[in-house]
Image (cartoon, rainbow, N blue to C red; front, side):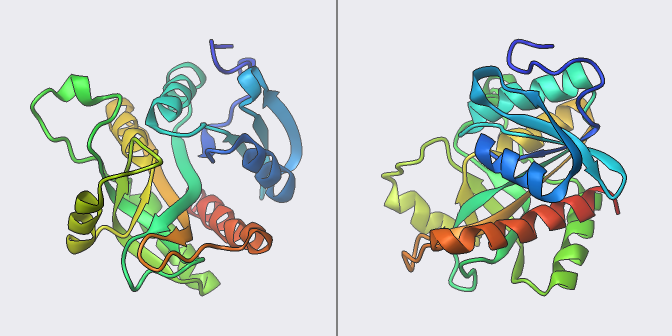
Length: 234
């Protein structure tokens, strides 16, 4: 048991999927895992452990933003021995070829600031995904015949962004989408020597202002979970 995770020793699997929303963690666990049990309810940040195709899996909510994810990822790795952490979440599309419901596999994650910024001081550290997970996730997405994009994303430290100039430059430089957690996850994975990947569903678009209808989100997010699970055990 840690400050933020109430699971007992042995209740967290080495493979952890991390949605931001704790209720999405519950939905994913109930939908895709067998023999599911709730292992964390501290502060309402739900976590579940079960099996997928016989493999132990934990699905643990991470909250919104890099500071929140940093807390859970640190404790999962350091105190519970997690070896593979895959963020499953939504993002905003930033390129015209990226469509609503498409999947983005984040090869790199640019950011203005992360909780790890103080460690690097003047260095602009470039966090990136684990290649094995990235390659396997691409293969799984291709099998499902969903729209798939691989490249750089932007991990923002604010939700209500008021920097249209920055968005313009990121779009100009090929950034595929924006979310709020992956850069810190990739940095922590590198620090601890574990595997990490962000598999993201495009739920809205910064250029077209389209948004995924609520009734369509479950199926689209389901594709993302299946891709993440398939990649973790390839």
